[in-house]
Image (cartoon, rainbow, N blue to C red; front, top):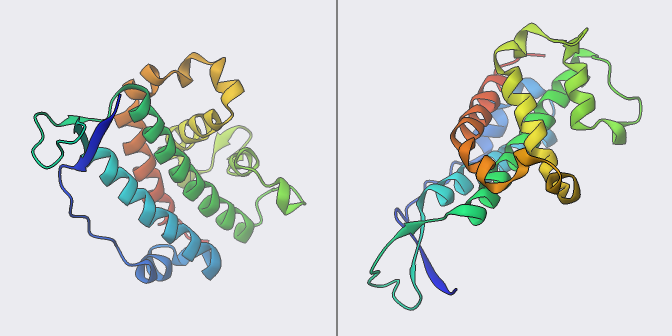
Amino acid sequence: MAVDFFFQNPTFNIPPLGPAAAFKWQYLCNPEVQYAIAAEEQYLHFHLHMLNNLRHTKAGLAHQPPYARELGLSVRAGAVKAAVLIAASIIEAALRALAELRGYPLKEDPRRRTFGNVINAWEENGIPRHEVTDIWSDVKAMHEVRNFVHLHKAAQENEAAWGNVLQSEQALLEGALNAINQISKITA
């Protein structure tokens, strides 16, 4: 089915990268990682704007839409999973940089410092370190949903079904933004 797409609110303020990299992520003490995170966070906010404002209508009638509907069903679930993937990448990079600065137990080989390895480094005897206790369930949820990129695995898990992703959309996205903001305040 062909449809036309448009933004309900076409205006988006793109936050500058420099201040986010230099100030928001200053505690990472790694300018390259800070800039990479700031760039991903910039795109995450655009992606969320798109998710909240993208509408579709009858093909050929975007200039005078007879209806304006939000993304729905599997297409919306895909956009939500993409947002979670971006957020999880930010969370993983920031927690890894801080864990490295603090000397937390990570794999010797940097290529094996996966999100799971980083999560384990932020736990002591299975309990999250005090700085992340309040956001730990959100961090773990990001890790789980991020793993839905493995489609063969996702096809076997009911939580990965698009209906379930949509049911947890608000909690996932709010949790992701909250975790990102809290992690940006953790000092090395």
